[in-house]
Amino acid sequence: MSASSAPNSPPTSSPSSAEEQSAPEGGYSLSKPVFFWAAGIILLAVLFALLLPDVFNSAISTLNSTVVSSIGWYYVLIVTAFVAFGIIVAVSRMGNIKLGKDDDKPEYSVFSWFAMLFAAGMGIGLVFWGAAEPLTFYSENGAPPNAAGLADPDRAERALGQTFLHWGLHAWGIYVIVGLAVAYAVHRKGRPVSIRWALEPILGKRTDTWIGDVIDIIALVGTLFGIATSLGFGVNQIAAGLDHLGVLPNSTTVQIIIILVVTALATLSAASGVDKGIKILSNLNMGLAALLLVAVLILGPTLFLLRDVVSNIGYYLQNFLQLSFQTLPFRGEEGATWISGWTTFYWGWWISWSPFVGVFIARISKGRTVREFITGVLLVPTALTFLWFTVMGGTALYKSVIDGVDFTGGTGDIDPNTALFDTFAQLPAGALLSGIAVILVSIFFITSADSGAFVMDMIAHKGDPNPPRITRIFWAATSGVIAASLIWVSSLSGDEGSGMTALQSLALLSALPFSIVMIGMCISLWKSLSKEVQVIERLELRLRQREFIERYSEEISDRVDARVEVQVAEHLQTFTGEMQLPPQEGSSESTESRTAPGRRSRKNPFTRGS
Image (tube, rainbow, N blue to C red; front, side):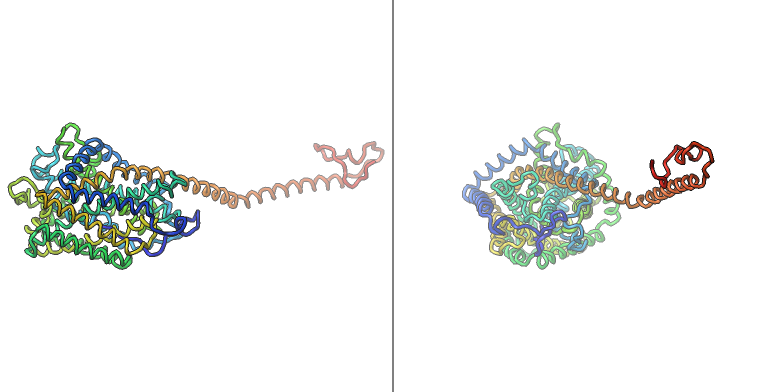
C-alpha cells in the first residue's frame, strides 16, 4: 500500500464561498497537542513491546480477541453501509457537485489519477497477497469453515470470491468516505487539509478545539500502525524474494537492514513532494505492475485466466450480499476465529489506512465531481484488483487444482511470504518474474513510508500542504522503526510471527475509534451535500421561472396588445357612430340619449355638462 503527498499549491474553495483555502487561526504551525500526544502513544507502545515483549504480545492479543469477538459484527455491518452510502450519493443529485469551484479543471490526467489511486490503496498488500490469499483459502487449513468440505474446483472458486470481497468494493468504499469528506472540506469549502474539518458540519465551532485534536490524534496513531503493518508484510516478502533468488539469506538481520535502507530512501522521496518523487514512483509502480501482470498472463494458462476473470466477477456479483454480511455465527468458535483473522482484520486494516489514503486521494482529486470521484475510486481500482488477483491467484490455483502442485509442502499451510515466488517458479522465466516482483514491492515500500509521512505531517501541522521536512523525516523513520522493532523483538522471543501479529492487532484496535469518526463523516457529508442540492434546486426553479417569463412574455404582450387594439377599435367605432347620427327635430331626447342600438347610454365627451 502507498499513497502520495499533497500538491504544492493550496486548494481552492467552492463557488459559494469564493475564497482561497483558509489557514487555521494563527496560520499553519505544529499542533503540539496532536503531535506530542500521538508521538507519545506510539512511543509508549514501542517501549512496551521492546521492554516487555511477552507481556505486550499477551495483552495486545487478549485485548484484540476480546474486541473482535465483541464487535466483529459491527465492522462487517458498517463497512457494507459505507459502500451503500457511496453508491447512493453517486447516483443522486449530490453526484453533480464539483470538488472545487464550478469552473475548476482536474489537476492530473486520468491515467496519472488512476495510477496514484491504485498505488495509494493497495501497493505492498496487493503484491504480498496476490497468490498467497487465494491459495490459503483453498488450502486444507486456511479455507473458510463453510467451504472446507467443498470439492477442489468449488473451493478454488470460493477462494477467489472471498479474496475479491476483502480487496474489492468494501475496501475502496472505506476510502471513498474519508477521501470524499476531506476533498469536500478542502476543495469546496476551502478548509485546511486535516481530518477534523471533514466533521465541521456537525462539530461547528468545536472543530478547532480539543475535540478536533482528539480526532487528528486517532487518525495519526491508526495510520502509523497501519503503515507499519504493511511495511512488515513488505519486508518479509522482499527478504523471502531475495532468498528465493539466492541473493541474500532470509534472516532477521537482513530484514532489519532492508527496513533501514528503504526507510532512508522513503525519507528522501518524502522531501521531494508529489510532482517529483511520489508521482514518478507511482507511475513507475503502475508500469511495473502492468508489465508483471501481462507477463504472467502470457506465460501462464492464458485462456484459463481469461475465462476465470469473467467467472470470478460473476461469482462475486451473484454472492455479493451474502459475502458482505458473512459472520458465520453457526460455525461457533471456528467461525469467529476465521472471521476475526481475515474479514474483520481487513476491515480494520483498511480503516486504519483510510486517514492517510483518504487525504491523499482527496488532494489529487480537485476539480472532479462527486460522481466522478466515487466512480473512479470505487470501480476502477476494484476492477484492476480483480484482474490482478485472477492472474496471480488464478495461476497459482490452476497449478494446484489442474496440475497437482502442492504449495503447502505437505503441511496443509501456505507460507504467504513465498507463495508468489513459488507460483512464479512454475512458469517460464520464473526468476525474472520474481526479480520484478521484488523491485515492485520495494518501490511500494518506499511510497508507503514517504507518502504516509507526508500526510501525517500535514495533519500534525494543522493541514499545512507543505509541512517542514524535519517532521516528515520523523514520521517516515518512526514507521520503519516500529516495524523493525517488533520484528526484532519477535525474533528474540523465538516466535518470529508474533511481531506481525502484534502489528495487525494494533492496527485493528486503532481502527475502532476511527470507525466512529467515519460515521460522523457520513452524516457531515449528507448534511452538506443535501444543503447544496437544495440551493441548486432553488436556483434552478428561479431559472425556470425566468425562462418561462422570457419565453412567454412577448407572446402574452402581443395578445394583450391585440385585445387592446380591438377594444380601442370598438370604442372608436361606437364613438364615430354616435357622432354621425343627426338630431331629429322636435325630439325631446338629448344628445346623450342617442346611442347605438343595444349599447348603454354614455355621455358625449364633446358636450358640455348642464
